[in-house]
Length: 407
Image 1: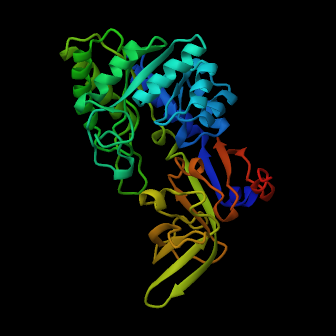
Image 2 (image 1 turned 180 degrees about the horizontal axis):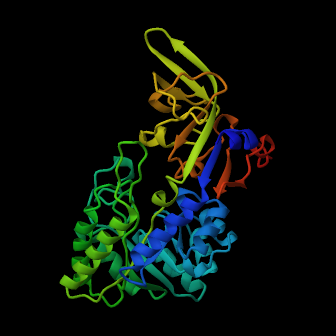
Image 3 (image 1 turned 60 degrees about the vertical axis):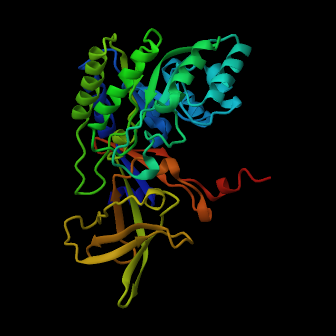
């Protein structure tokens, strides 16, 4: 990390390329051990660099996109359109048209308005589009309120209770240019309590039985598996998650007397989160007697928004002195003109001074993907390291690019 920071500058996001590939392969193998037709779909919103998208294609994953921009990036990376799943709770006419023109494999519909709009636009193009209906089964795992999406009160999907999901099924079946092929369910993110998937599977199987199963042959269980952000986090391994999801779905469909569905899952964070680390350089320290010590670095909320957005907790290390004893309690802050630009509220580190490097592990998901130019800060470079060899996959943004769109 020290050598890479010297070569490429800071802030710098470094990914373990071998770990990325290994995790993708573990996912595919774990799910296909239960059913060779099971599909793993990478949720590209977690991190969408071209190098990562190409890697996902090479490893046999499908691709989940949530906007016209993410669709463009997947196509630009050479991803086969038929293996792309188009998401989004507020897709507009342009994005729907772009998905249809690209001939994506699946569109996940999220509202009755969208079903009508999709039917109209597909009809204008003389196409019939395969769709999944996103349903919210009312299962709420213990995660941060802002990222729990399976509960009834959510901007996502159709709730099973109250008849909304049944209305969506009816609307798709009546639409001439929409071909219903299954359901989609995402109960939340950063989940450790994977037993929630068993409860969701039971509710979904009951719904499929009520609605008739002929056109509901796919069951996409979404993503959500958590990762370890700190030493105390102990998420289940990929294999345990795969076993529980597959066994739950297949058992519940069997119990309901239904033909077994083709199961899909959409991991994002659990593929890229632990593979990425961010390295900063300390710009200065500030001691307030009787209050606390502040340590400021050359990045912050423009490259890692999760602590400010979700209250996410990270730990820090000093790459130059990884084994040094932590003797100081300090607040690690960014360089932006916001009092909330705090990376770690209470960091435990060895003595730190200006010029030191500080590393935050587990920043591979929703760091670069959420990066901004707030305060005119340029977005960081990204390096993949494989077998000890670094490859620059995203160059650092330049000042000139900050004004490139201005007229």
